[in-house]
Amino acid sequence: MTKAIRIHATGGPEVLAWEEVPVGDPGPGQVRIEQSAVGLNYIDVYQRTGLYPLVSMPQTLGMEAAGVVEAVGDGVQTLMPGDRVAYAMNLGAYSQKRLIDAAALVKLPAEIDNRTAAAMMLQGMTARYLLKESYRVRAGDAVLVMAAAGGVGSILSQWARHLGASVIGCVGSEEKAALARDNGCSYTINYREEDIAVRVREITDGEGVAVSYDSIGKSTLEASLDSLRPTGTLVSFGNASGAITGFNIGLLAQKGSLYIQRPTLATYIRTRQLLETSAMDLFDAVGSGQVKIRIGQSYPLSEVAQAHRDLEGRKTTGSTILTL
Image (tube, rainbow, N blue to C red; front, side, top):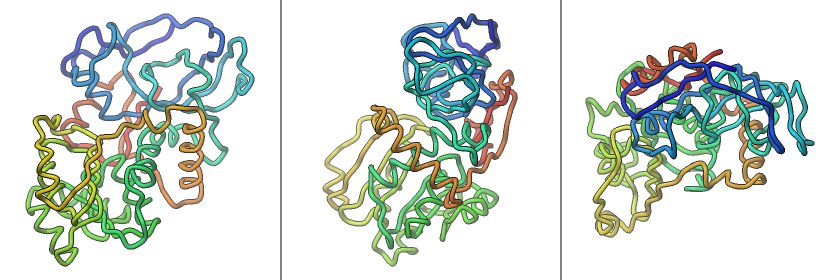
């Protein structure tokens, strides 16, 4: 047996229950890992509330973690007990121990500890595909990053700056603006006090940005579109303020022949080769110091309900981990 956070129905943070659950021996192609740290992500909230439906109940939430291999099943040749590993986009992370397919795991290099790995796998590989796949950032591009002091935003801003972009970070307080500037933002916009699109036009001498990376969703859609240069790109990769519905695609023509994408990390790591390419690129960026992973706060896994409340209340900065 092991302890895990499960939900038996969708709802608020109060549905998160700390329970004993069975964990057996790994089957063919599987490993059992003892987890040392788990990452907290907004997708956990979407699944808890039912915005992203789960196939069955009860369900253990959580999509990324890092730990140590305890046992391997038949046919597993790439891993052995004692290996430090991490993963992302694999439901069931809110647990002390778990079974998982070996193909979902990547070995951690010596320079990246387990806490850092748990804080960066999902958010870091998300930042990578945003910058190198969704819209390929070029030196000199002006880019807008919503929630620039958050987990993905902090990584995204640093990496974009390294690629030569001029980064405009949108935040909700002066404290978060300072963090965004520390993470490579040349300019910051406080959305509570300033009109985002108007300020973007001022910063870019009327041109607009090449791309807006927007994890907020419904409440920032118009601001993102109005901040883009002609033929610019909106990458909407989250729904923190609610899902975008009833979108009039004709707006893209009216506002300058714009592009829009609604991606997910799962698509960009859907094969073993893609996963390895993404993870190795992230490891290189972090290991070389191009990107620093800032763990803004940590909570015991058993207290994850409070972590959800703080995340939804926009009280967190940087990455958040759940410790075991």
